[in-house]
Image 1 (spheres, rainbow, N blue to C red):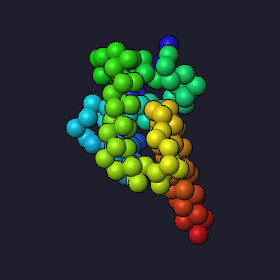
Image 2: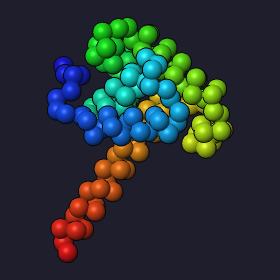
Image 3: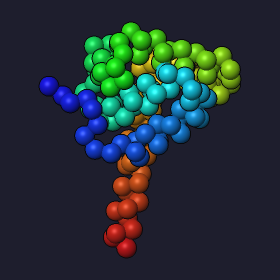
Length: 130
C-alpha cells in the first residue's frame, strides 16, 4: 500500500504548483486550488497515480483533505471553470482555445515541473564540470 501522505518536504513542488496555478488564474480561496496543489504534489511523488485519476488520485487527495473523491473532482473542475470564465484568453494561450479537463491540467503541471527539475539539474551538472 502506498502512503499518500508526504514522505518529505514538498515545499518546492508546492511552490511550483502554486505559481503554475497562478499563471492560469485559479483563485487561492477556492477549495479546488488546494486540491490541485495536493494532486500535483502527489503526482510528482507517485507518478503511478497518473494512470488512474478516478480510482487513484482523487481518492488519495480526498484522504489527505478528509473529504470524498467526488468532492475533490467537483471542486477541481469548479476552480478550472471559474478561472477559465474570468479570463478565457489566459487559458486559451496555455491550452489552445480549449478548457482543460482536471487530468490535462494536472498532467501539464507535472510535466512542466519535471522539465523544470531537469533544467535545474543540468545547470548544476554543467557548473560542476567547469
